Length: 403
Image (cartoon, rainbow, N blue to C red; front, top):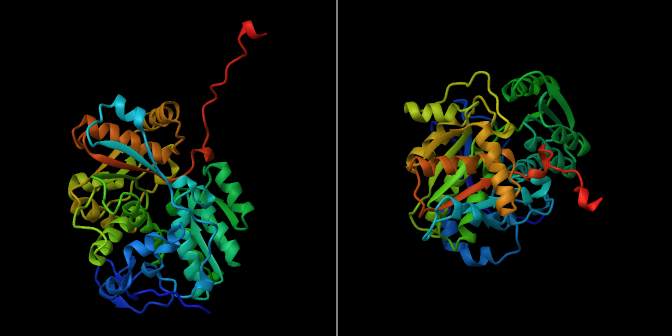
């Protein structure tokens, strides 16, 4: 079995700093918080050439020295690609964005299974294979379950997925079609997560819920590395990120620190903006109150189901990244989300998912409130293809003169 060169040294509790061995099966730490994967970055700095890494074929596996998989045979891949950066030029002009300022969408919908969940689940499933796990389960609002089903089926791992009863039908069906057993639950994603936790002993599955295992975050951090590479190893002024469990926001913040220690980037950091919906905004409320942890949001509702997460186990890591970056948390209502989706599609030809549209709506509001400047380079994350979501019927009858 060919080994990758990886510089993993240990896992570390994100709350207490307690260390445990890598290459072992771990869930949450003894403190009930996520583990973070740590690397010997001094050794990596001496041995890993940034430009040589960038010259490798596309896809996030090119960053393998900064990922935890040790054996190439355990890599589970569905043909991952670099996701493009797409300027919203029409939108920028209409909002008066000028000078060096621009609005750029990183379109994660181009990944396998149509969402950024492919990054995290590819790593989680690859590590499950490496650690000998044969049965896994998770709760999902849709796209994570689809990615898990696809990667786990490719790896020969049995999968169980629990989703809220109102999960978009296309997600439920793709999860099932890609080989997982899928169950609809009368409740939100945290109720689904409770069922996964309840079945760990009786069903013998491993829980790959958001941040309840250490490796999804390592997949998501590749968004930050890839973004830096695409921008010539510079970072934008501000990043708007749709925030439910927040794995990607946490992962990118971790990636920026690792890249600086490697000498790949300087000390400049983008302001990190956690975008939520007004119907489910626990991070916004905690940020506004100056709290370290977020209380559960009751009666959560929004058209952007991917960010309908009433409570996040990594809440303190999300808030820490936002505050350390001098960023902010902001919530937008469903009407603004739908309007932004229409404007991006009709004006710039880019079909955003509702969660991606939320970042555009949040950017517009932030601009109006002078939270960002028109001269800022802003990157918005579109986390999934808009083709998976319901669209308004705007067809018209054939004009009389053509009849």
